[in-house]
Length: 163
Image (cartoon, rainbow, N blue to C red; front, side, top):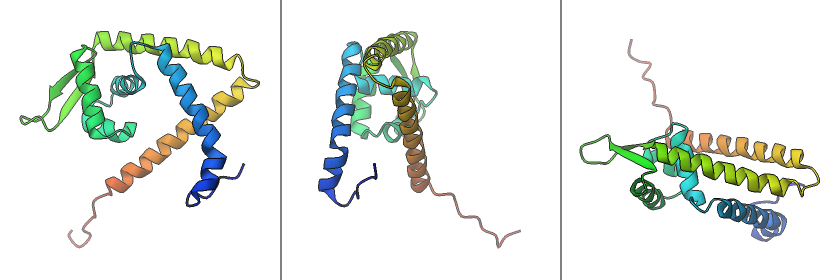
């Protein structure tokens, strides 16, 4: 299927609308599978667990606004799932670490979501093709994020006139 022109909104909605609806339904299935964590809380815990503990970087990597990240982090800290350490005396920069309780909640949520996804895939005609397509989407998300980060943080100019 050729991709529709993003400037022509009606064909985009017509061509990609069913995919958006399906992804929304899938997100709801995954969120329902783990009543303990919302998807946004799961995503924050997963990112911190993978070693990305700067709160300011989470907003960009998760495509959430800073107020949404702040609210999620505050909730996870108050529940004892994340620990926050101030890197600056004025609290402008913080480092987040997943706690043992947070790791337990993350592992439980992932297990429950995997069971729900496995159940869904049993109804698919080609589950391997779906998994391959999702893997390709994951790579596309990573490439898009890398491109956005490189635009936001261009390399410093090098002064070649000095020796």
